[in-house]
Each structure stands twice: as C-alpha cells, then as structure tokens.
Length: 154
Image 1 (cartoon, rainbow, N blue to C red):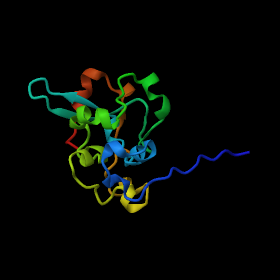
Image 2: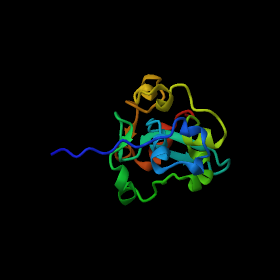
Image 3: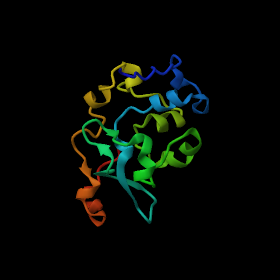
Image 4: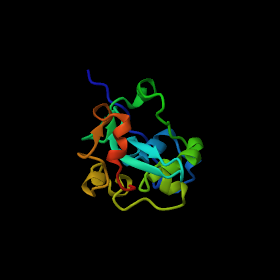
C-alpha cells in the first residue's frame, strides 16, 4: 500500500501576506529550489561582505538543487541555518539576492521565474537561476582553497 502525503493547502497569493502570518507549508513553499543558500560562503573580515563560492554543502544534490537530508540536516550540518520569519531578519544579509525570503522581507516582488508564479517547479532551472550542474561538493575542496571558487553575487 502506498502512502501519499496530503497536498498542503496554500492560500491564493499567500506570498503577498506578512511573512509572520504564513503557515509552515506556505513558508516552505516560498523556497524556489535554486540551491544558492546551500553554497558555502566566505566573509571579508575587513568589509563584512559575503562572498559566495561554488562549493556546495555536503548535503546539496547538485542536480535537484535540494537538500538530500532536509528534515535531518541539523544532525549532519549543525551550522545549517533553519530559516524562519524570526531568524530571517538576522539571516537575510547572507541570502542570495534572488532569494524569495530575502526579496519579500525587503518588500520586493517575487521574480517572474519563481515557481509560485509559473506553476512549474523547473522554472528556476529553466531561467538559469539555480546552481544546477555547476557546484563542487565541499568534501572535494579543502576549506583553505574555497577562495579559489568565489563567484559573483547571486
């Protein structure tokens, strides 16, 4: 017998509501599945600037751009940030510039390619806005070499 997960009930255009009023399912649905937040970052000690690298978290699947252990990620990666409306204000600065959570927190609209607007979960990949196919797993790169993999802001 196959067990099916119930489809979450999402309010129409829920992303236009205050972020702290979203249900857990709506909050999770904001994620576009780009995988950019799972890239390892470096912080410039002098300027505080966040530099993204193409070195991906060990749990990121480079093709699906999703966490391979999402529900248990803190067990495997204790430093992984669990983003919530409360933690967002302290975390938005290191989120990619295209991130729905960051954009909405800044009062900006979702990008046209966002799956909530297109109805297609692959639209993020089709628009070239995901990390699909160009990351390097962190276990293949020594941490002292991450700066060799710095990329432009996303």
